[in-house]
Image (tube, rainbow, N blue to C red; front, side, top):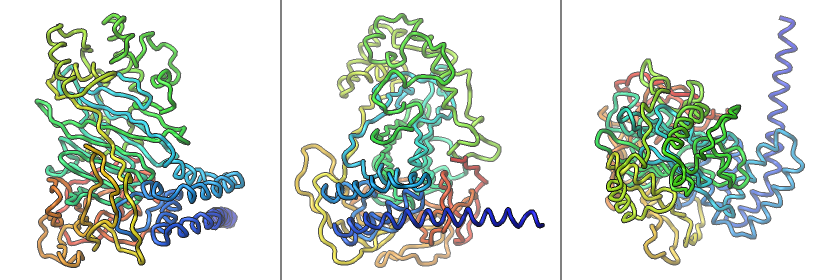
Length: 542
């Protein structure tokens, strides 16, 4: 017992020291808060508090203004003069910070760099073919679950599940993401539970969304329209997920936009976004990489000079050695699983049985596929991938998606008092003024946030107040959608058996826990109207 007393004292002293360091960071941040509230007392206060929450990896406060911006989008609305003053404050504090506070200040600096940083885009599409953030294109016919991109410092990760359609071809059938601390999963085919009509999971719970935008607890957003999901991180990164159908199964085309500035820890199948293609396919500890360059697999002039056998040798290297270092493990997985399942359920390292290339096609089939791809605007490095998909599987061409900057041409109106804008709140319109419209460019969605809430099963929404009222029905329901917004067919929240956490469940207002959220962002169980439970799911650790 005597030995335990000093140990307990050491632990308490460590906790006290950490709290003191956190308080110092919060105190040193106050000049930034003052600068932001000088710009806008209401929006600036929310943005300052959100920046602190992101740095500490905690849920952000509710929005107190009509716009549906993320913190990164709101930062773009801050005048450059204010941002310059804030950056000077952050730079000085970073230089003077101790090792613990420096982590938080690095996060602040990263958030401040977004408005002036040019984003880059990578994607995985079709059968599947990948284009890295640095422009390297390659074919990746494998089976299993893989890390597409990961940044530990930014609380950000995307994992893809590839399943076989035949002995030769695989497709992306599921996606799992860590969105600033919230775990988002999209399942195009088989679901991890018995809820077959819902593709989306938030922290392990099925979620329906019937409005134009859904707010995530840690500051991100989800938008849905015409089988497209757009997931935006609180720090500005964007994943666009397009649900398609082949002859046998649904699959996903995924495009990811990141900011390479001040972000030097990116890794995954989409590369590291350092501006160089040459190191995108390095394998740790492997010095026997074939001479055939991976970024020549599709759309590079070197491929035209390489033999078909050399290309297949390199494809085998990618599917074996390169794939192995980015395979998901039971510890790192962000996916949900059914009873008795794990990432190994979806792993087959012997796939593919045969490597196919464009050169295996007859000239006539190549020409016919090329014409269709070019008619749909496919050019450059991704043309070969499109020819491959069209000729072998008749997958329609998939042009690179346009990521809309929703802050363009928007002027914020003055607000004199806070406006309650949460999922299911009472805001009826955005108080933003478009100053001009770009020809042919998508415009920011005008929404009715009163309908912007997924509610717990067994509750109804009062159409006039937007508040929840009890219901005797246990049948899954969803919030009435704005008639001007197309109603998606999938999304709702329903309690399931998942690992506890301290984030807010979708559509339920709870006070955030005082402890920091885990990286996987799983939800804390909340008591709602009793319903029939679904089979237990195992959520991977993020």
